[in-house]
Image 1 (cartoon, rainbow, N blue to C red):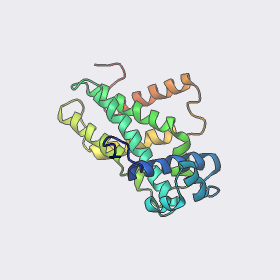
Image 2 (cartoon, rainbow, N blue to C red):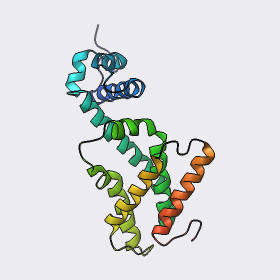
Image 3 (cartoon, rainbow, N blue to C red):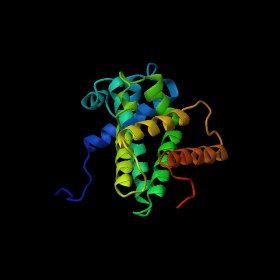
Image 4 (cartoon, rainbow, N blue to C red):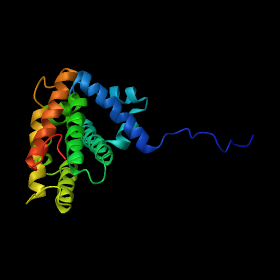
Length: 204
């Protein structure tokens, strides 16, 4: 019988397998901790053979590094969507949207952030001075300055300053535990972002 030309392949793409392993590892790491989780548990959770793990990762530490990257990219994706949802000329709205989306990204994945960056921190602190979120914020601030939305001498410095302020606030233990507390926190963060560039919340 001839093969069905539209039949689905038996094996999944490499990136899909990798993502499934990361998702299984994230679930187990959050439930049990990194040290207590075995590679066999990760592969079982992803429904693959143990050998498949070593085709994608060298160790649990390698998976954790990949989870760090996925976390930050996910936050950036949310920021980009929020900023692009504002009117082209609305720089105040873009800045407020950036701050709210970044804070929300951290709050929504607080457990993963703590696991990946606090409980098992990276080898250096470079991420707090140079990462894709800071780079995006720096570009936004520079673009707004070029359009005379605000005056900033050093967009890069300002981006590092604002990102670290936000990062410190959203990572306080027990912060924003209720919807009203979260709404108040996001409002305060937006207001501080705007004030830092000489703007006011709700202004024109």
